[in-house]
Amino acid sequence: MLTLQCPYCGVWAEETELHAEGEAHLKRFGPGSSDDEFESYLFMRENPKGVHFERWRHSNGCGKFFHAARSTTTLEVFGTYSAQTLEPPQDIKDKISAKYPNWSWRDFS
View 1 (tube, helix red, strand yellow):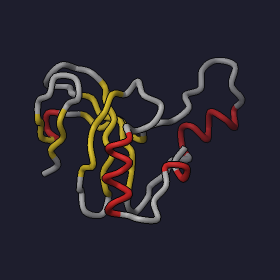
View 2 (cartoon, rainbow, N blue to C red; view 1 turned 90 degrees about the vertical axis):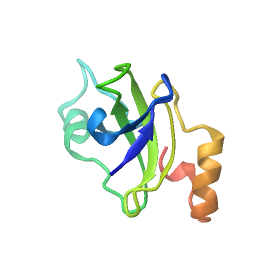
View 3 (cartoon, rainbow, N blue to C red; view 1 turned 180 degrees about the vertical axis):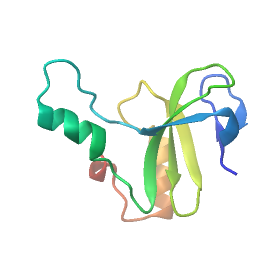
């Protein structure tokens, strides 16, 4: 079972206490966007084998949204961080780079 730590309240929670919200660090589109932009936002998502950045909500706790970095092949969690940040904290990037030497944040931004 996947266990994540909420970066806001500090509680370690199993995935049953959380709600997965999909891919993190997406540009959201609102009124006035083109049909192509909106279609891309809705349907053209990454589904990588390896490192993935996800958006989660601590639904049975503080209720706040946060991001998690994890491996989709091993379920190894590299860390969680505030959903308000534009990119992962350096310590999480360092953990990922130690495990995957060829990994680069530029590939995801």
